[in-house]
Length: 372
Image 1 (cartoon, rainbow, N blue to C red):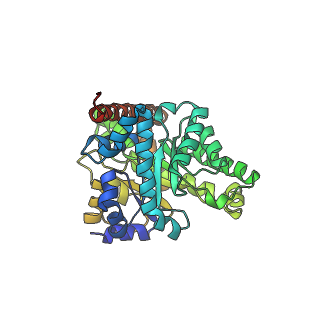
Image 2 (cartoon, helix red, strand yellow):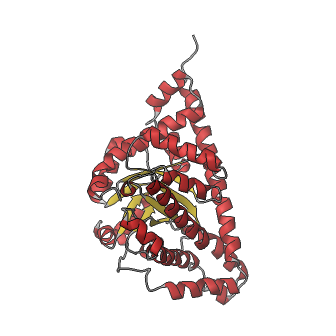
Image 3 (cartoon, rainbow, N blue to C red):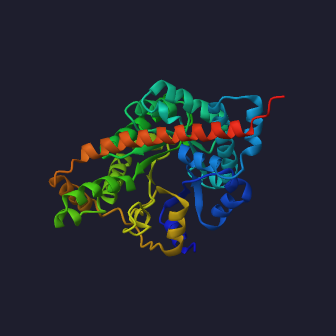
């Protein structure tokens, strides 16, 4: 079961689980995944927590206490989610220590309703870091226009960041620049750069979902032949951009001062088109110094039948560019697609947060003490 996962890890791909729940923590399942499935990190989001809270009774005791105190629903969410992240971080702490802080990390997201507001995003990032109070936490900040300066300021404060919702190559370069600017400010403050980490979450499957829809609508043989190629091409060119940045004089100076590379993280790697191999966005994105965060179904698929044949990114840049160019020649605008995906991504995160609010409020009402 784990041979493919071990090979993936040996190729330099850190395997992170895109899921968390109290049951995973208390049942020993998370520890088991670390010990048996080569999982070395965890990512969370509002949708994951909404599912966890609404299913089963694992949160009843804490929710009962919170309901008794008559806390607001937002305070309840923060208490619940930071407790889970704290406990997961403790389970992952040995990995964190063994890898010098590179892995063994758990991500928690700022309120997505703040995605277009820089100052509140920074304030919430600081609050979340304080609440969780574990060195192996990553605060997730979206790569919106307002998010970029928030990333810089949060990094400059010495807080490690998972930059999320990256779709375009241009925005990814801005993210890497924001990280370096934050490190430069941190260095000027005298902070230890070796303790600051970051990953840049480049979303994969949603690119194919949108572009494939447009290719299918065109319906020509040429268009249909390009289905399933855009997402891998986009991600592979992102890795090329990463290589260019880490080879720059600016980065070399930071690295010599102790800075850690901001690893590309492949997110949204669950395959949404059932006609594609269910391991497509894992086996097609094998490259050193990367992270692949997988839903459990994808993790199990890779462990069961994933074929890891070595690096599948470097050496593909010319073909990747040709694939995106061919799609553009059919009238499908890259800039328009990635902008639409970012807008929809923020909206989906906001909806997931609202669903989390609704589920938590319902549970608080259900468990509230009866008035005498």
